[in-house]
Amino acid sequence: MTPRMLKQTLEEWSREVRVPADLADRALRRRSRLRLTRLAGAVSCAAAVAAVALLVPLVVIPHFAVEPISRVGGPPVVVPVQPYRETKPAEDVMTDTGNSPPKRMIAAGRVAVSAYFTWRWRTAGGRKVMDRTWYLLDQVTGTYEKTDWGWVEVAPGLRWAAVLEKALPVRRIGIFDMEVRRVRAWVPVDRPVGGLAWSPDGTRLLATAYDDLPDLDMTTVDERQCPTRAAATPEDARPPRMISTSRTGFYVVDVATATAGDFHAVDPCLTDNSNVRRDFGWSDDGTLVREASNIWKRPDAFYDLEGRPHDAPAGYVVTESKAGVSPDGTLLAGPDGMPTKVTELSTGRVVGRQQVLQLLAWADDRRLVALGCAGACGSEFHNGLVLVSVDGEDKVQLSVYRKNSQKPEEWHPVLTLR
Amino acid sequence: MDAAEERRFREFVSARAPALMRLAYLLTGGDQHAAEDLVQTALAKVVTRWGRLDEPEAYVRQVMYRQQISWWRLARRQRETSVADVPEHPAGRAGTDEAELRLILRRALARLTPRQRAVLVLRYLEDLPEDEVARVLGCSVGTVRSTAHRSLARLRQTAPELADLRLSEVIS
Image (cartoon, rainbow over all chains, first blue to last red):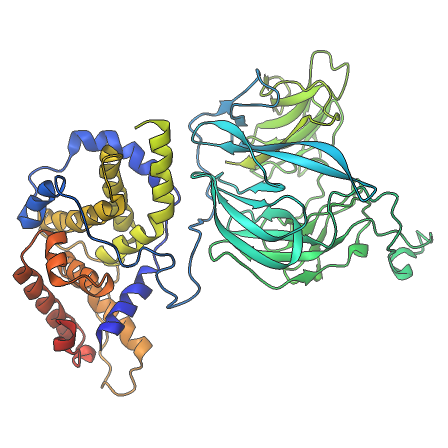
């Protein structure tokens, strides 16, 4: 055995450690306790000199200060991302009913408004393109910060975000540290991507690739068509459909090592969907790729992680709202349209109706974050975020009611598990 | 600590947490929980002095080294790793490849005292000369030298497969 082997062994061994995401929080919490219980009576020359050390400048330069320290034993971890674990938030409900767009953090139960965007149309090459301006939560200050990103997707836990630069689609994905407000790693991709989705455990990203602007208004463009076989079914013998999307496939990104795997092509003609932006998502268990159905009551489409069509996972429920099934799996949020309803999943029995427009996310097993409308609901577009109980009895306003949610420059919230 | 200082502290922790945790993991003999405890204790000390430290990372590391040794001494027992299995001794050196040797070595390292491990980490991972190791640990060069000698002897005792460890090369 040699010093080289000793060094390699130490480096290899050290890479097995898990890096908690909340070390700074722990240290800050511990600060006050430490003041009272500072270790006294330190023994040995080591401890005796420790006190002196406070008075003298330190010159020790760590020799493994540059990341990564080693490539021994596997790819280097460059982003200390940890699997998401639900924790009880310090503040159950956080509102901002004084600012539109919101300035202060909005949250209820297990979800928070992690980001929001405003939008407007611009013209590019004679076509209309939707431009978003993203605002990202800063948990340290409890405020939202305007960004220059072209796309933002916050991971469950609110510790990390994935970002894309403007001029979508783009050829690199940024892993943004929400705590220190900077990109910790860039993940290059061969084919440009325009949409992102974090896996349920917050350790992987699904990046949807496009070969043209994903937010282009292509409704008048007729340059690509699905093959006849895809459209001509006994029920639907119409001429071939136009392919309205420029979506080409996806990448699965391993966030810890900041590496994208192979590109996986997906035929856009496999599903009926006239949207240009058709981002992929994850199945609830994170094992499959999901393409949300654009047609009411039609099930979502699923693919394996290689992009091959796949059966729906066991227990899959066709949902009619963004909220879907309650965390405990017993209740199902009903479709948009006031009043909304919640049914018992096993029996279909209605267990509550709510005077809101849309059920967006479950705050817990008995409450939902919803889109509610102001006053007597004279306009469905005069709406904002509310927290409503399943029985509809309790309602808390979370945000300002927007004057007209369909108008350019209005803000649109993104809800994420916190 | 104001909001700007807290932001800088968080940035420092975010950037250096992987390296600090790796060091702590080695110092605690591969104990994840003890490593987290060691790092957060050291960082809590840094918080109280944040803004007055020219080299916060060097300070954190020094606190970690000394803290670990201090805890061990106070406890009068080793804070040993959960790697509890005594390494099995193969019939002979022949056929033991380098990967296997590294595994054996790791297990043997886990059985050293915190002070012994600290000396080896400083000396052979961080590549510090003996006088620097002595300064970090607050001991004499002679203590560092004798500790390193005992550490290597204990490695050989724990794992005879490492008997050909070249002492003269290691203790240069």
